[in-house]
Image 1 (tube, rainbow, N blue to C red):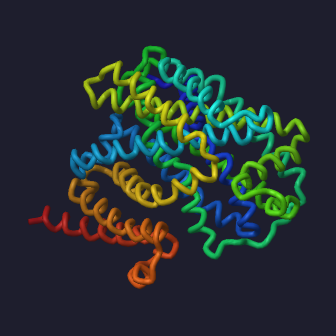
Image 2 (image 1 turned 135 degrees about the horizontal axis):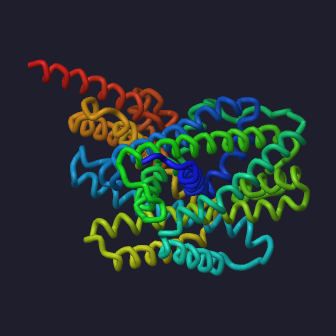
Image 3 (image 1 turned 90 degrees about the vertical axis):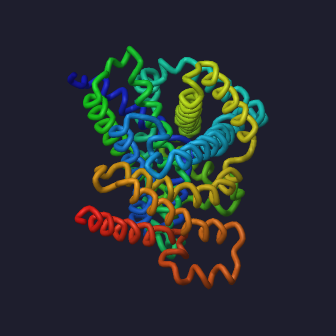
Length: 434
């Protein structure tokens, strides 16, 4: 079946919008602001974990066309089950509530002065309504919400760059590329890829999308992933560059608390680009971008547990309700507090997610169960010092990590995972020749 242009655009826009949430909008400008004249190098690192890896995750979904469970089943069914449960718990406990916190801090509180509890309650009630009507999710987000979000983002970026003096400050980062890579973790885009990719696949199965054949779905999802990735690249690069070029015009440290640095920097940029109307634009932009991401996370979580427990619609509804209640509870924290809580969690789960994505993109004759098991095990083991080093640093740990390349950048897992992949592949080839 030929893929219609309309279906391609709707799916591409929906993918972009499900990715693009609170962190995706608030993190890049501050990253650019602090990177100064190194903003290009920071952008390169950021793109690796916030664009390239997530889109490869969508490509892996296009190939597997299953659920998140399929990503880890070559390691073992037990591992995959534990991994899936962890991913979905993390998704509904951190990035989903973070969208409500960002919406409250930027769009709701400045205008109405209401409590975080009221904001998160109304917010997740609306999320629940959309999730329970999930057959309309792809169409609504793809046709209406995302084009509006993209137009407003491009307006803020283009006018902001045009009106800036194109002067940057001095970089605050010793290793700009590594900083960009780790900041990309905070977007949760790799986790988003494995979660919302399944949402896209399930949504395509509804009659209104009429895409049936495996090959047609694979082509549609891969093309949509590429287009969505291109959109993310343009927006991220634009937001980072705007933050860098406004670093000489805006002093966010003089009169603003650290908790609100990201929100206020983006607000200043919007006002500089669009005048006082920029406040309204930013409020609408944040609300829509965050809302669509929360829908994707809650729907993806409900889909997984529905499939896990006998394809029960009751399980889907109950899971969606529980995820929304958790969102209300965690959504009362401020945005910065949620980021701080997320860092050790991401240092643990993100490396495993990255290697699972990369291995699932490779041909099956290369990425065998042996390769999966050895690479994932080594990645897990070498991620532990990064987590411990962040939570409870000590001199004893430093003695160990000094011998691990890139460990000082919390990337100590990278080289060991690559080396064990090469060694395991060599052993595997030798075994085949016997």
